[in-house]
Length: 299
Image (cartoon, one colour):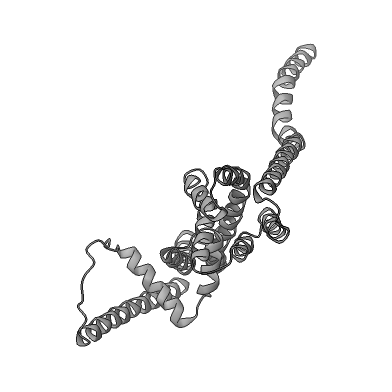
């Protein structure tokens, strides 16, 4: 009964997806027809890469989510942007995984488990639903940590470029280009700042947007330093040098703190794994010899 219910739900899901694909194909045909009637020349972009079956399926799932409101797609898009995934395909793949993983996990549990099938189907479905959210939270944390670790190097390069005669905006573009291989996360943030400034956003506001995206104390302090420098007319290269040195000192202190914690963290593996093995290796021969001696003594 449970297996039939799951198969029915899977069939309904695939049927809705197929209907969505047909609606998308119809809408795209109507758009081309309207352009042709308007006198526009419809051309096919030969440089566009052909989309695979999974990409089309992900697009259909995204359209289905947008029409039915099953998931909050704008909120997921914002969170993916915080994690550094800003392409439309990333949102499509995430929503596809979020909708398909519960079904796949529930169906797999129904086939693999022989007892308490309903319980394990529900558990696997819930785990499959929340697994993409856990991955997204971990990706956001990794992105923020990568930006934090790259800030001192970026500020040093920024100081060198400004002392060479570049303005802060041109130096920012140059630093973002140089960091694209070693620190792609921070390079992407600098690229967004440059695009916002080209769109007319003031410099301080663009940096504040970066601070809101990353939610890092380092970036917030840097924005405050830029505001004070702009307000009081302090040379920005000297302010950047002092701020970069403080960041390096903070990073070194953080590394020393983590190194000091390793001695405490090693206590648990020593007590649970290493000491029992040492006791067995050292005491087992003595116990065996004592047992043999006692046995010979009583014979």
